[in-house]
Image 1 (cartoon, rainbow, N blue to C red):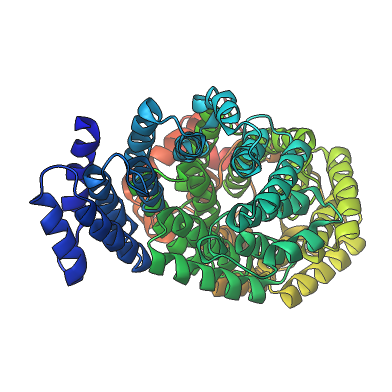
Image 2: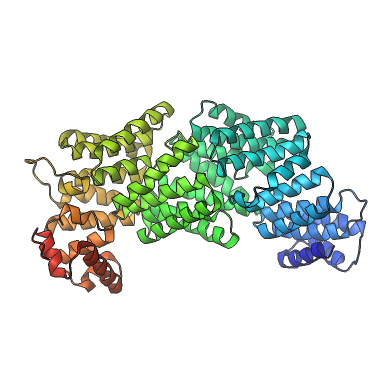
Length: 605
């Protein structure tokens, strides 16, 4: 038809690289010079498409496949629709979702064979990504076309597993659909679909803390493996990576995700590349390599923006990387973008992750009240979703810490107690150490100075041994601030204990510097400088200021000019001026002198 011919002409010339192998170039040239059906041209183009696919050029394969379909006679095997569907699947691999969707819709407009129609529906569903709400009406048609064929039903039930997770937020139902899909695929002898379904089932069981998770992962990793699925971002390799990183096996996780990333880059699998770049960035962040994590996260975000693949999830993780090693304001903006996109898509799974990133960024920015609001929503969402494993989002320690900061130690202790039970059952050692760090803050808020210090010291040591460099540094920072910044813990320190000097922050500064955790390092430097030369702002007023605002106010109290403040904080003079304007508004004051007066407890009207 004219529409398919147009797609073929649009895809193939742009996709063919200058250095294309001679057989591919010859096949395309002959096809373009041949008008109408030509079985020999179709066969040559089909072979050229397969060669391009094997060479990691799926975009080229899609264009060649469309040309092959145009030259395929009506009674040929494989038929024109089968070739078009293979081209659509190649387009998906290359990240060309609009092209894939257009091809599938055209096939659906004319195909009658159930196998072609179901494959086309699957392309439409895959092209929608996480925005499944937009194509929800597709599922009944796909089921009707599948009939009672186990192979076709397996394809649809696998997609229904994703629907149950992303749209309904029903993790148990998602696991059941995936298990059913795996069983149907095994009956039909469809090993690729069986492996994908087992990989998905394993991921659900991991998040649920289900005891069958290790056995399902072993089933998914069992031979024979299919090369098309082995490195898929929803396959068994990805499930094993998630299991490793949640189980604190960071070195093995890095080896696994690096191998997967190299393979998908070789094959030109753009969607999987976005996912695996993000996975490698997560591994580096957990290990305390914040600069490396930030570089990888930004690279993943650029690729996601270019292709339109996984933008919400990638923005969410890049927010975490920015909060650790980059710019806190950008972290906040990216997290809010991820929240908005997840809400628009009706994606409850990534909404909880995005809110977790937002809460973390708000905590790093010094807005504990906002962090509590965001992370309380995460707690409610994950409870409804059935997420049990606290290593999934690792937001629990942040929520407890933020609750302490706003004066809610009872609720903080409840978060710690409930999460600790789950972490103990699942043997999540790093989660337990972070919970101990948070519990030390609760104890300090109650005036239990000695036990708090001992618990923080133990938590720091354990996190260091496990390889969680950033969390280790945060424990050192909390330990340094235990006596020097009591207002940051939500209550005054019990009297009588000598106040240590700025040297107390040296260890935290060293660890943050090693991690290249710049936002945290600036906090340490500000806290140390503020303790050395100026009294703290009144606690109630300080709680209203973000981290940068607090740093600027502290330097004003030292008598620094705007230019000096800009140089100290590595920001522009205009940013200092705008920050001071916000400080004046939040504190209800008019000048720099009022900041000093407020700090001294002599606020004037």
